[in-house]
Length: 221
Ligand SMILES: N[C@@H](CCC(=O)N[C@@H](CS)C(=O)NCC(=O)O)C(=O)O
Image (cartoon, rainbow, N blue to C red; front, side, top):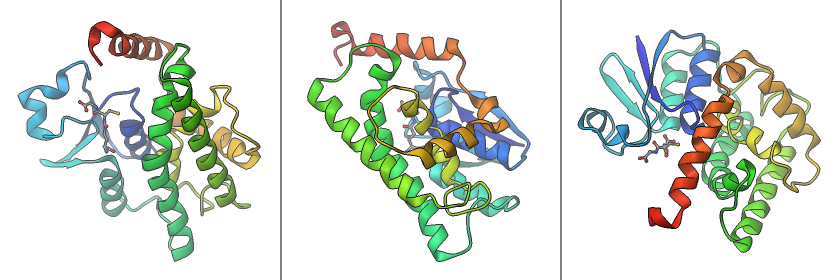
């Protein structure tokens, strides 16, 4: 059976978890506590970069979440989660890659504010809000009359961007007018795969405690 090493609160691993559910695959979840379990010799033998997610399929270890999504799509092609036309495939890939390379780093800067405690300095926060706003407006322009990015059916763009955007839209940030993206966000969040993988309030509290400890002067970070 497929095994997913993950941490439930991580958007990087949640995108894989959602894809496994959306594809209706049988899998085992193995939680890796990121307080140190990722540095054990057993886990480093699976991923020398000490990151989750890792998908293990019959002894084959796949690291890097986007590589895992491509592996799942190639090996388990139904339901299809990549469009066939060059135009629509480009839309999906643009959303996936900008979510990882542009949106997630800015969202990470804003995480303390969204979670309700002071974090980065005012200039960094302003830059991160600008970046998030630019990305979300870009996505607004990519959405057309279809319910998903470049598709009538769910694609890989949804689990990738759709595990970051709900946090941002829930954070009372000044992000401009993005009605199509807000409707898209409601649409994906109503799906059982999103609801099954939603972080519990206890997980959010644990994350706050973890982040507060990392940001305290005593931690040296
Ligand atoms: N590019 C990687 C990033 C994975 C990543 O950064 N995972 C974080 C959790 S969100 C992690 O495992 N952190 C623990 C560590 O780096 O020690 C991917 O997409 O899979």
